[in-house]
Image (cartoon, rainbow, N blue to C red; front, side):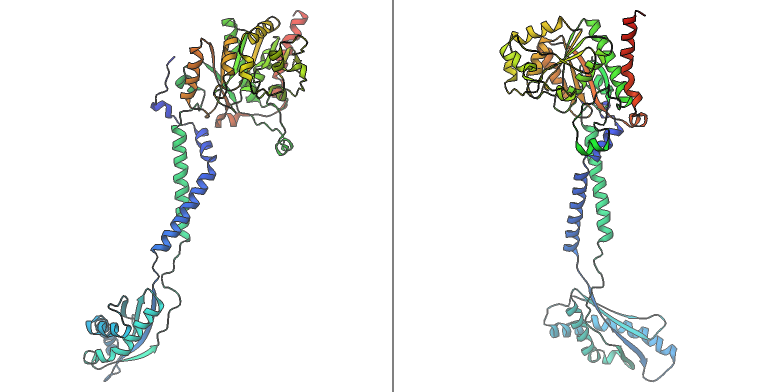
Length: 479
């Protein structure tokens, strides 16, 4: 089997569900980034914003020696051009500079005529209201003396006096710009997280097991919601995701049937009776997989023993709703090797027994080392068709490696889009270096749009367990 830990184009095949999932779970980062971009844009816009204030005055243009309208209109247009030259002249600029006490006039002065009228409008635009008004006043006080010999027989009568502008004529309207910045920043961040999702070398679908790992593909297990009712969700009720639950989803149960059939076939073919179930990291669902694999094997009329080999954080008693006593503690038995222990705990599943406990042992690795655990496991083989051992993650403790040496093979449970393929291959190689046989890798909690569309939740799906009882009844009756 080819080990393809190197990056290829096939590694970057897009899985739509994981892509969208990775984007949505980072909504807070996208929102925070978009808001930060808006704040930065707001600051930059304000820093670059220069308000402009315009002071205006309106004149009526008329000729001294005629009242003809065409002559007046013609005079107005001529006066506007002339007036513009006057206010831009060096003479006027010097007068204004002297009046305002500055070296240079930083204002825009425009003289225009309203179309079809003899009204001339003078506009002075500056960066402050006071400056615009002062320049306007300076022009009005001195334009007559400067233009006396230029304007000639044109008369300018003030129609509207200038005033100090209180608001800029180019208000900073940032609403539309900031909305656009927010949308573009959010889209850019969503694209970035999507790109990172595609580039992450994780197991995104079942096919990735064979493409990226040096291990046998044992199938995939569909994702199932842990809390079936609103009351359970609000109360955060602790419960196991078991396939014999009447409310278990059809896709969830069916995926376990396929996986357990493949695992049973492989173990029977190799002559294996004991199996260690582990994962690379925490929160990958290995304990649930171990429990459901044990249930599936027991429902086929096999005598199954499930051992909770995670002495530091036992969980199988919670999954099955059991209440271990001190006499049931596997850790105490392995520490003291007493003979008065009653390790076997019955479950509600016929022919399925649990050995474990609820106590936590910080020295679990020391307890498991040596021949004591191996002898215990050999004794268990005498009374069980299959033994499933739930162990801690390999990346956390070395306990799984010890159990792997005691059992016939190891099954790795890896959660969809969770651990890098390179890290999984590293652990697989580590186990093989210790002469441990690998059953394969099963992909857990798999979600896709196809699975969601075909998912069914209902009581009938949990009745797949009846097939096991059906076979049992016929076996007992000799049919």
